[in-house]
Image 1: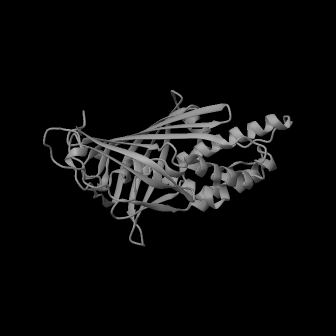
Image 2: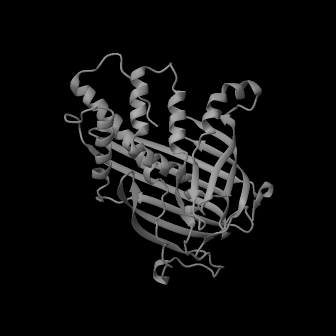
Image 3: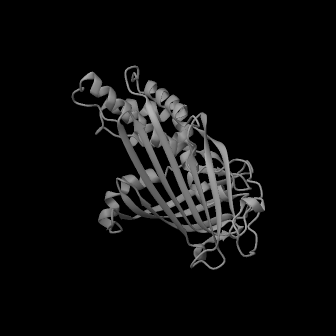
Amino acid sequence: MMNVAAPRKSPPAPRRAGVVALSLGLFTGALLSLGCETTAPARTPPVPSPSSTSSGAPAPSTGGLAFGWKVPCRVPVQQVTEKETSNGRIRYMLGVDAAPDGNLNVSIQDLEFLEIDGEDVTSPEMQEQLAPAKALSSVIPVMIVSKSGQYLGTRGLDEAIERILQSLGPARSQEVREVTAKIMRSPKLKAALSAKVGDYWRTWVGAWVGVELRSGQALDRSEGVPFVDQEIPLRYHYEHHGPAKGAPGAVLLSMTATTLPGSGTVRTTADVWHDFAATMGLSLRDTPELDEVHYTVRLEADMEPAGLFPRRTRQETDIEVVVGSARRQAREMREDTFDWAHAVGCR
């Protein structure tokens, strides 16, 4: 998220305007990753025609990939993340249960920190230091998923936001707490946060539901995806790479989503940028405009096609934002490994 800090001394107006513009531009870039990160098209992609697929030896079809987990389900997962600011390794239990409304509740439970920036943090001393972060992890909202495997939203998002705000504590100034509360309680950021939470499920399962590809085939399509309360068009490229190496019974699937040149991405993100600036009480009247936004996400999965049981999933996200003469790039990677041998239920 965004670190909001009140400067001790305001810089001259032109310089301050540039700082505000770049900060908000980067914030908008981060929101782009929140709002549509790995969001697969809502409609099921069509079966690719022979002219649109690459050649390959005949293989069993993964056509109409369908979600087939049984509930209740508990499966251990280990996650590795790489960001500009830090790297980490965690372990958690993924739970899937039937919900009273007929959908499924998907929750991240019993999260443990294993490694931070290459340092083992499993000792009692380190775990004690990480207790506040672990407590916050317990309020990760529950994901709502349909029985067909599509992400629908979250439960408990408001409670999670309030817990995060309470965690700021007296160490932060009153101004910082007030501005942060305005941002996090705004309906648009809630929508973005809900999409971000759902990004986990889409990477594991949702992006692949309904995809119809045989080994060696590829599929391209373009479709708009929700971005906060607007829509941004993305180009999707799916591939079926055949059997996954080192994962008997699984196939390797990949998907790349990119913003389309001249598609209105800058205008749409600028609108959201201005809305958040207004929420923070900032004026953009004299600031440079957002000039460019480039976004790419790459997914790959070692997947058991019958039922969509992922062995391993990997997501790489690249965002580039240009405001005036300032250009900033950010990259993130997340890889999850599922231990189905020690799962309970699920199949």
